[in-house]
Length: 170
Image 1 (cartoon, rainbow, N blue to C red):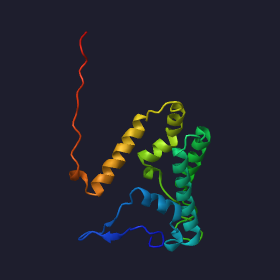
Image 2 (cartoon, rainbow, N blue to C red; image 1 turned 90 degrees about the horizontal axis):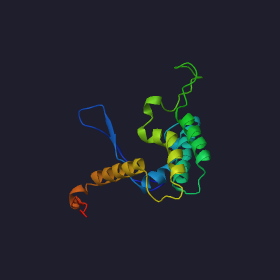
Image 3 (cartoon, rainbow, N blue to C red; image 1 turned 60 degrees about the vertical axis):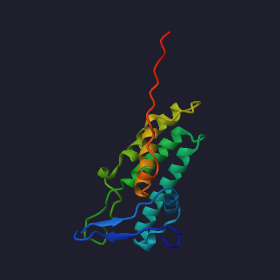
Image 4 (cartoon, rainbow, N blue to C red; image 1 turned 135 degrees about the vertical axis):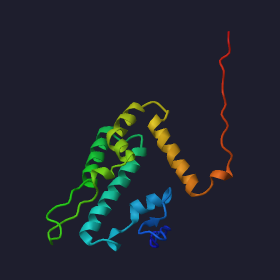
């Protein structure tokens, strides 16, 4: 992490066996997706798989933001990425030929579900429309709220006030 200039730490919670870690926000996530070398942690073969998984995700992330991205091609790339994400273990465990898989179906988050199953529809429906879909707005709100909560800036800014507009009777 020092090589790519990102602050990231692990620590064990006192009195438990649980490990905690710092959250990556904004640009730091992109830097890690693009540049982190998993060979520092894993053997070469596993590191290659994990590097490939997260580099492909970064490419999806970039393509998602581009207006000119072909939605059908994007959907195909997203499904290929999910196949890699869900790569199962191979062989008999505790043998030299065993190859550990990447993630399990229960590790698929709502964000991944939206990326794979709904983003194509949202991109197709957006053509010529500048309005964000409700799902994008919810994800954007959640990400911003999480960022401000983790940066402890929630209390620094006043909450927005609600404004009610009544229809005028004619």
